[in-house]
Length: 125
Figure 1 (tube, rainbow, N blue to C red):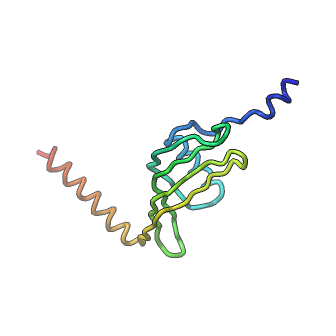
Figure 2: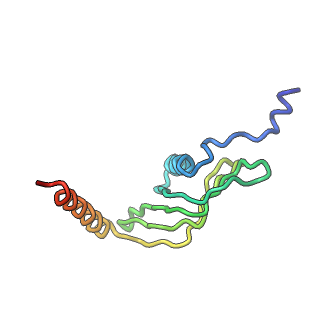
């Protein structure tokens, strides 16, 4: 009897209801599905649904590898959400900018050099 009553109860989400935990869970879901997607910097997140077991973040970043095009999409997230019934993570992007591997290497290298120079100038003898 008790088991029957509990079966209708909402199941807990497989993550803590905070942006960092949800981002980690979403990234693992995408990885398990073989999707080359990474989400980060989630913000403005809230629980939703009748039983409040759903979760939606209204801002953040989504990085999508595009190996065939030798680059990556850098997207602003419009929404990223967890659907408890299907236990899936879904997303909608607001805008994306493609950056080729070469452009990313140049920009990343410049940032590293700049940080290194600042460290040398600030703390060097």
